[in-house]
Structures are given as C-alpha cells and as structure tokens.
Length: 267
Image 1 (cartoon, rainbow, N blue to C red):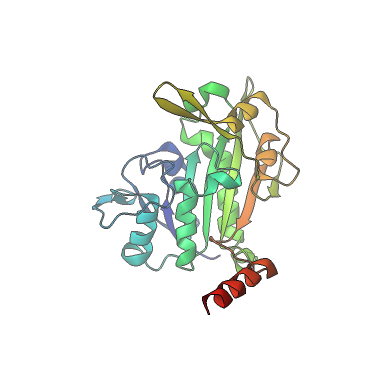
Image 2 (cartoon, rainbow, N blue to C red; image 1 turned 90 degrees about the vertical axis):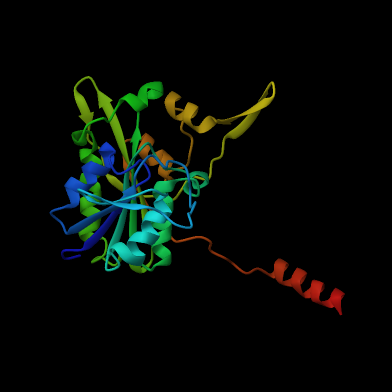
C-alpha cells in the first residue's frame, strides 16, 4: 500500500507507551492520525456511547470514549478517508477466541470492518509472570511489535490479504532474558485457540471469576494445538490471525427442519 492514510487507535489510552511506539513507527509509511481514548478502556469490548467529547491532541484527536467510539468518530467524520485502521499496540496479549469479543483493541478492528475499511489489531504478549505489568515501559520495548506492524501495513493490502480477511489480529511475544529482549523466531498464520478455562469460586458474598489460562501460560503448560495463536506466542512466534467481522452464519438442515415445523404448528 503506497502512502496509506492510517487511523491509529487503541484501548490503553492515547498516551500509553505502546500507542506512542506504533505512532512513531508508522509515521514514515503514511499519514497517521490518532483517534484514541483519553484514558484506559481495556476490556470494554464493543461498548459504544451516544456522544463523545473530542479534544485536539499533538498526535491527532483524544476521545472521551471507547475504542469503538473512536473508530466511528474517526471514520465517520474526523478522518473519513482513512485507508486502514491500526489498533494498538496493546500491552498484554489478545489471544484465544473467548477474548476477542472482550478486547477493546480487537473490537476497534472489528468496527472498522463494518465501515469496509481493513484493520490490524496488535498486542504484545509479555512473558513476565506476575510482574508482567512492570515490563515493556519504553517505546523501544515495543520494537518487535512495531516492526511486525510496519511489515503488514506496508505489504498486506497489496498482497490481497484483505480480499479474504476483514482484519488481522496480531500478537507479538515479549520475552526478556538476562542478555536482553529475545527476537521472535518467525511470523506464522494462526487461528484463535478455542481453549476455555474460565471458572468461578464463591467467596463469602461475592463470586471470584478466574481465568485459568494465564496460570497455564505462566507455568509453560501450553497444550493448545499447533496453528493456534496461543501456542505460537508461547513458542516465541509472531501470531497473525486473519479474521472476519462477527458473526458468520452457516445454514444447516437441522435448523431448517425446526423452522419448517414451527411454521406448520402455527397453521
């Protein structure tokens, strides 16, 4: 894609380090306009507001709303000529089918698809155990995620990737050792893992909701099949999942029969 007009958004907020990293990294590929939340909007999914306040920002526009608000405001009026939406870089992975609908980062890409604008959501999987939030605090820490995003922004459109996919969900591993940051081994095409480990435990008058996946990730007990996004990042690979906007449908004879029987019963 030659000199694309890029709408850049995220869910961690416009001043987050991952966002700044992508803005800096993409600015020489095209015209980048930030339309991003004023504050952290993590895990809001496709939540939407009726109206949002918008403020000028040195990178573009700061929106007092959700990532979906940002995409609608951006493509609807603030930068309607955007060729591509990039969402990220999120600090923390967005992997697994059950996470996609919760993620503000991914939801921004999904919303772009309804505008028929291709999109890329980008997240950093941080292999840091319980201390992961204290890692990846500098723009340079996002260099591998930025490089992967640049590569896809520069080549995916021209290669015809978006003729089949509405958006790409990219997860890049951040693996820090005593000798420095480990470079990802390769980029692989994946599909979202369907493994689900949510559970709940009664704790007096409240119920604690627990996601067992992250415990497994920390322990290295990844048994997800080859070809899944979670398996790829756990093995130090950049995961790229080509996805379509929800919700796909597939007709099948059993439901057709039920519908026919319902009509007959009403007669």
